[in-house]
Length: 210
Image (cartoon, rainbow, N blue to C red; front, side, top):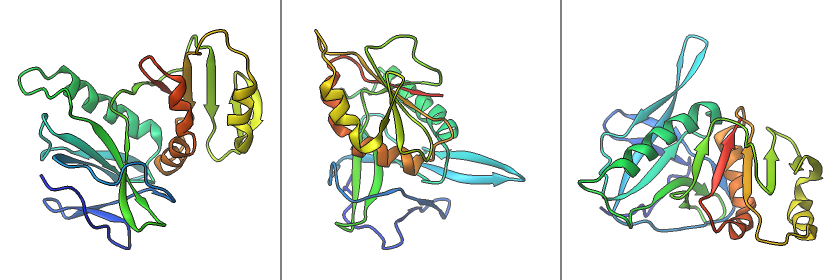
């Protein structure tokens, strides 16, 4: 399948079958610019009365391809991540058509480069709970400039510097904890801002939504 080569100025991704749209999150940098041989998965924002619902459309997805997750930026993580977990488990559990090289990516709009960009998350395991261990637990609250680093309050812009000051005898087991009410937009912004934390994880990356 061809990779995305164009992004609409309005930063909308359209599902041709349902004629619905997904309002993508934005960032000012591109982690990955091109993904070839992909299948799209859409998670729409739907409302039923006073309830907000994450509505998944994956009927065009092929197990053996790279999966592009196009998720509405307004959805909270408490609705997004359970659906992502289900899809991850389905792909990981597939044996007949499994492709070990196939990756999973979140799509977003690079508002500076005016292109569609992608954030890989294939190896991440999610849990809808708090971590019970971990050498370095970093907690991000919705809309806050204060981040908890092992329960110590640190300004967001000083987090990486503070972590660098901690003396670890071995490479620490790093867990990221995100507020379940955080928007998907804020989540993607945070993930991109703290990409350097990936270098700490030799093991399977784990993220907790609570």
